[in-house]
Length: 499
Image (cartoon, rainbow, N blue to C red; front, top):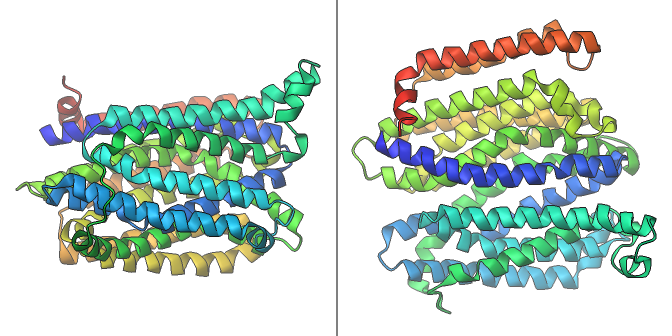
């Protein structure tokens, strides 16, 4: 229980970082959708950041998790850090040079022939973020959660401030005739969504400078004897991560190419889908915070006698929290929807399946501990590759038929299949006695309560009078669910929250 309390405290710190940072970043969603009222403009943002996510996985190639494992196993931790850092730095530098040299051909392929600068900007953003990943991993491994939190939040705050400066403050000054000649040098209306990318670039540059102090003890040396087993451990994680990011972000790219006959309509669909998908980020906030603290915790607990019991309890309470997030978000979606402007509301129906998909993704992360702890990372690669295949099959089948709705359900179907496969393999190779009865009860109760609320008054067919009634009913439903949790879990909750 002491270790669970430690995990809970770490989750709160990392969670505060992730939630505060993501909420600040999340506020950019309404800001952007209310500035760029035409969804096709926001579609550019959705697609470009999908490529960023894909490249981040390729260029880090599993070295973060590899750093955790080898840092916990080796006494010479600076050697592990130096080898990890310089390996990442070398491959990323090669990527950056090639991307800058071939920016125009890449822009032509992505159908942005007039904007090769997008490719240059994003190449630098990705490179800075990839190089920063190992220093961030070191902070996590050394339990320096507060420093980690400060730098992460600073990055998000700077991103928000730069967005406000370029997209709101500069146009405001020009419209009021204040220092027009000066602000006209900084702001050019035709750049449009490009200022979102410039803001990200500036913030990532400052973040990398802030991490310089974390590189204490860094030697300009790659230990070849250490590198070989590290790469052997990491490369299956690359396949795993690559397949995982295909599951997570390839849909934006496929929607662009499969959902409509002309490019404008396709980018409109990408914009609507990307904006509504962001509403479900509420679930991913918790999962990301949990992951930051849980991964080092899982490796530490592996040495303990009752490790499997701890993993089982963690899974149960993870599902409880996720079910609360799902229910709270869907029951109040009539209000949450105003985080995006009205032209994007047509896509709100994708939010419930995407929330459930995120929940199952979090369960997959919990289940994945067995192959990470035992070094059998090839099984993680098998599961992720299988998920990627399912993602491609479902997206190619459904997007031409039902547009971006098919992409949302592809997430649900993929993560459901991955969850089942991961559980089955885990029980075969590293059996853990998960409380399936309790997990199933909380999950299906939350889904059933949402279904009751939705079919009484769907959120897309509602009057102001119905909204009031529905809000009262939904609040009552949520309170009932919370009371059920408190009653069934009172003893453990009392210990966890005891000072």
